[in-house]
Length: 105
Image: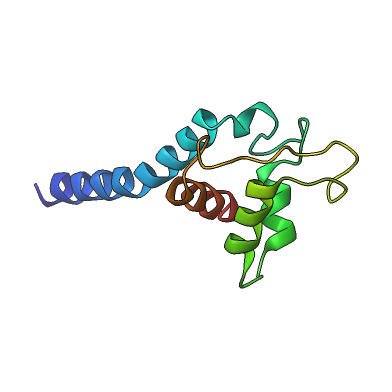
C-alpha cells in the first residue's frame, strides 16, 4: 500500500511541476512566438534551445530578452528581423513566464 501512495505522490508532484511548463508553452503558442521559433530547431528565428544556451548564466537574461521581444530587432541571429511584440499580444507577466520557460531549456 505504501508503494501506491508513493507512486501517487510522485505523479502528483510531476503534474504540478509540468503545469507551469505547459502553461508557458501554451502562452508562447497563443502569442504567436511558435510561428517563428521552435524548442529545438531553427525556423525563421533561432530555437529556444539556442537562445537558452546563448544567455545561460547571464543574471539579466530575463529582463534583456523581454526587452528584445518588446522592441524587436535584427542582426543578432541573422538578417531576418524579429518584429516587436506589444502588450496587446502578450502581457508583461505572460512574457516573463515564457522567457523564464525558454531559458530553462
